[in-house]
Image 1 (cartoon, rainbow, N blue to C red):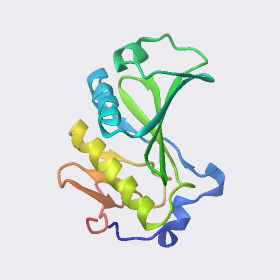
Image 2: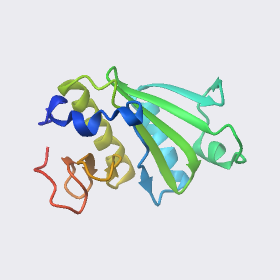
Image 3: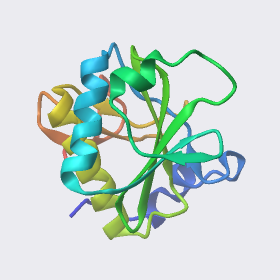
Image 4: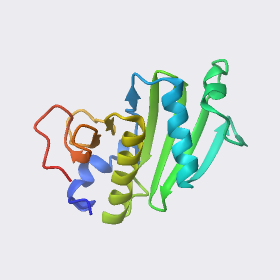
Amino acid sequence: MFGPSREDHAGWLLDPASDGWLPGEGVADTTVADWQALLDLVVERGWDRTFLVGCFEMPLPRAEEILSWPHGAARPVLSVLPGPEVAVVLRFRSAERIDLGINVERLGGQEGLAVLCGFLAKVGRRLGRSVPTPDRGTGPFLWYDHSADRVRFGRPGAAAGPPR
């Protein structure tokens, strides 16, 4: 189980100004192949998902097709539920960055944090790189440290807390 409880970190997890969402930090320096690996992971794991373009739900196409669509007002969004208490939104803005947002209002204490940590680790292992969650500037955050194969609490490159 993940160490800190929801109550311990309510200040950084639940910011009323963000409407309960951690805005997308994402994984930088990605490719279409990275996006496809992530989509394959979502399908393989059987996570509930909804792929929307504008207000229309569609079957999930391949990453190459999604990322080749012309930029317009309706950008594709994939909502993924890796567990009942965790919701992640993937935004297809460019091949070079996997943007993600996390709905912290759904996190249900220890169990939700454990699912979120598991999701970050699975994505990081599949992509072969570290996966940060958003940094709000002053507070600590969770991130998957690929070199240690662990989810950590704190900022990458800083004196992070002990591995969790």
